[in-house]
Length: 176
Image 1 (spheres, one colour):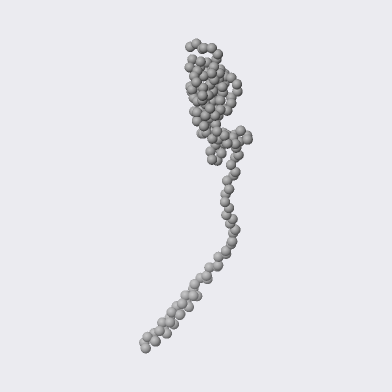
Image 2 (image 1 turned 90 degrees about the vertical axis):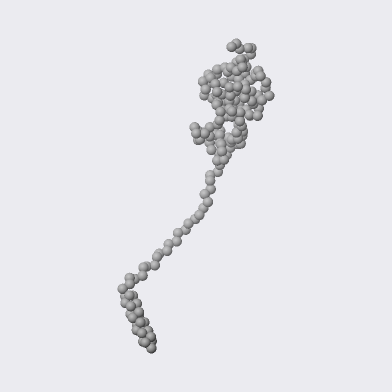
């Protein structure tokens, strides 16, 4: 029976303790204000690639490269079709070209295999498959028609990627 007597007393003490604590507690915090924002998830779409006509050009080292040429005449390279002019001087085509050299600008003759060649005509586009390297002039490769045999009557000088200037052998023998 002692247990029964203690039980009501214990409950009463706990009840008083709980009642006393509730008077000293701070009020509960206010409920948070919920704001709803609308978030739209979109996929970033890259700009369209620049247009250009695909073509293959012959480099000064005799190798072909695929490029695109825009309607404005820009050379577009790589998967993103970047303008070559925007990538210079960091990136350019391999090989040495005659454009801007003093001997080319000054219309000087070329000597190769005891023959002298003079510039004639205007620069034209040539394909690598139609040409072969037959010599060099001041570090710039000289080309001839792929089926031509020495001595060559015409050689071609790469002026810029894909563009070649014809040089014709002087009639008669050059001393030297």
